[in-house]
Image (cartoon, rainbow, N blue to C red):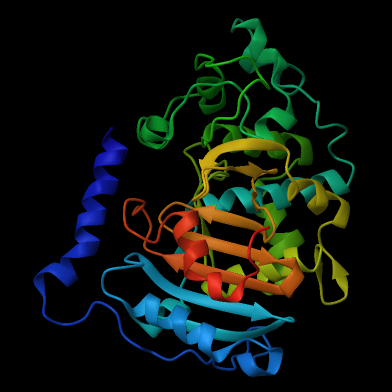
Length: 365
């Protein structure tokens, strides 16, 4: 409850400028990307066939003072070029890193894919009983049957809601965090039911550390970030030094767009294959049905820490409105950064985001 209260207070603080001051909360700072020495080629939307009318519609919606309240910026990459980029409060938001929240989970999926490609993970059916025999000793025998595949699809069965997860794990600081998570009661048998939480990817973080012999953040730094030219970022760790695999990564907007382009290019960046196409095909296809529903009431499919948008593509989604949408048919990536911890504000939900950018994405069948 404390975590929810803090999020609510932050949401109110975010609204204060528009409620108290006469000045606008948002500003038109332009939409044409500046050419920087950051690995991106820039161009105009017209050069890649994007509609000026459609983009103007999106920009007007972003600048409204009563909608997209948490949004800080939006970027569009098409045909490998950064062609549209706008920030609503300050251009400084372009140049410093932002909290990705649960979009971190998708990076954890990429890290898992790197380890899987290297043959360090024999099977997705590997269990917690095999990986962590000491930590599951004396617990409910079903805990030994939790598979990596269950953890990657939010089906461990462990009952540990996000409302209390961060407080109990990173504020109360249990002596053995992994044992603490595994000791939580089961809401269902492992593999039986999807339930979106941070506990499953955090256990995957521990599994990666054990299976690879290095911390997840170090694996990502050498295998992904260095080739992508990402060097200005922050990744939070727990008290025991394990990276927060579910929600701890902070990246600059253009660097987040690089991850989107990597996904669009089937794991390839320039001439180097950083993650295999076969892993990304598994991770970004439907593995399970989620609890979150679109405007028509249909549940969104879920992959290995990726949200599937039928007829459009797939997405990374972080609390408050952090998004990376990959649209293969349009050879396009759309990135949104937002204030963190503001999930009650309009614009923070996946449905809100898809409605915002609807003028430039294909309609769902």
